[in-house]
Structures are given as C-alpha cells and as structure tokens.
Amino acid sequence: QVQLVESGGGLVQPGGSLRLSCAASGSIFSIYNMGWYRQAPGKQRELVAAITSGGRGNYADSVKCRFTISRDNAKNTVYLQMNSVKPEDTAVYSCNARHVADSRYDYWGQGTQVTVSS
Image (cartoon, rainbow, N blue to C red; front, side):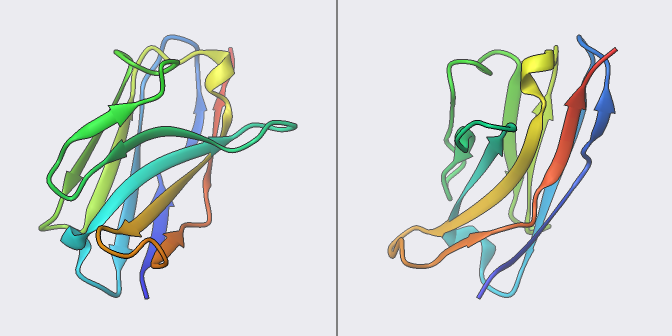
C-alpha cells in the first residue's frame, strides 16, 4: 500500500510558476513509476508528466518545455515544476504511483487545485 499526499497547489497568475510536491509513504518509493495527471471541469483526466523509477521523464505536448517532473528517492517525493503557466493549465492535479513490475499496484493521491488567473 502506498499513500500519496500532494501539496503546492494554489492561485497563480498567467506566466507565473508553481511547484507541486507529492510525498509517498508505505512502500519502497524507488520501485514505482510516478506520474502527474490533471482534470479540468468537464474534461477527462489527462497525463501531464511521468517519470520512471530510473528518472526518465516524458510529457504531454501541451506542457513540454514549460513543466519539469523530477523525483527524490531519498525523500520519497516527486515534484512538478510548472513554469510559464497558462489559464488552460487550471485543473486538479493528482499524483499517481504505479509499480514497475505489476500495474495492479496503482495508487492515487487526493489531488491539489491549481488555478491560473489574473
């Protein structure tokens, strides 16, 4: 069992920056691939960025060159650095952990709201 707790959401102006954190507990963090997803009102949840247990990241086209995902296995934490944010980035951002060898072990955090508005 893995527990995930997101933090760092809030209100930010267009063009600003925000860093989300997701702290994990309950299992060996390094054996999970991690991802950030978001869901805006009336839209389906979408993958924003993911990072493998080995540290390789991939991004949705809409956030490439603006967002950076990283992880600190010593702190059991994954981060999402959001730069040059846009109003369309407004959504609830959720953290996901998926076991590298068995996708049945799949966990979600409660989500954190990010609102981009002037």
